[in-house]
Amino acid sequence: MEIKALVKQVNEVDYTVDILASSPAVDRDKEVILTTAWDMTNFLKNPVLVNSHDYKNVENILGKFEKIWIDNDGLHGTARYFVGQGNPKADWAWALAKNGIAAYSVGFIEKKSEPGTNGIAKIYTSVELLEISQVVVPANPEAIISSNDFKDEAYQRAYKTFKEVMTMEAKGVIPYHDYGNADENTEWDANAEVREADVEKLKKMCAWYDSNNPDVKSSYKLPHHRASDLKAVWRGVAAATAAVLGARGGVNMPDSDKEEAYGHLAKHYKDFGKEPPDFHKQYENEEEILKACGFEVETKYGRIISEANRNKIKDVLSAIEELEQKLKNIKTPLKELLEISEVEQNSVPLDTDAKLKEIKDVLLKIKNKLEVY
Image (tube, rainbow, N blue to C red; front, side):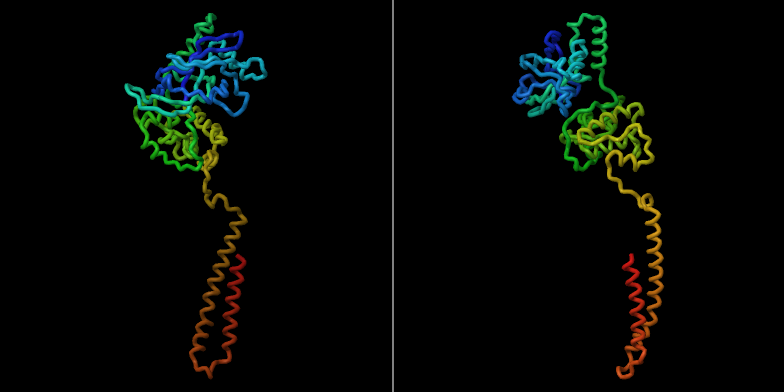
């Protein structure tokens, strides 16, 4: 879960920014976090400024917070950038911030919440602050840097345009969010998950929706988050990606939106430690798409049997036909043996042993044939 932050002041001398990290404003998810909800105990042990919520390497540490405080307006912080210390990412992030083109996102873990009213979906009453990141696209209209301190007219125009874009309602492709991952072996039933969810949950569970009918459940496509806790399900991610690439009938959405929806899903592949398939590759068939997406596909025999194996099968069939003929041939000596066994003991014909040897020879040939195969 994340909310967005408003920059209040920039100091170019000591490379610091003062931000309002959280306010009681309603965000686009129609959720509110109370100013009294924050638990910063663990955050204060390592108060770093992170690059786009990416914790995988130390280069994504852009700076640190020197001060954090709470008042009636919300959660505030003063962050110092690590400028000129060998990290190009920190230098570039600072350049954006000082030029008035910056946004910040606060990540937290929900502890307690309650249902909202009057259009508010949820009110968070207790949360643990995890980190604060500089990001590209904020979702809250208050979530971008203030241009009041920037006198350059070009910066003012850039800020105005950026703010207008940020206040537009998201359409079509649903932005990626990390709600955590379910166990990789978790079963996935897309229809069941969609039935369990309402429209508000589907906005978080899916990768695309029909913006002309946002209140209709059938408008939401490519589900891959679990309805119960919004955790991403690996098999759901793979199925949604396969549909974007055209497998299993594809998905009814504009082609112009497919690559962006793929980008959403590709981030989940990274979350599961997997490589996403190539969006631009020309796949030969559905089976190839499914394999690329991570499915274990049961291949049809006709497509994988080599010529050598085909010849072996033909040899076995030929041997079976030969054995069938020999089994027919054995019927006569067996019948004769039966007739011999019905006469009196003192008048057994002399050819009994010969008949038994004939039968034994045929059975031995059958045994040898079977052992070969």
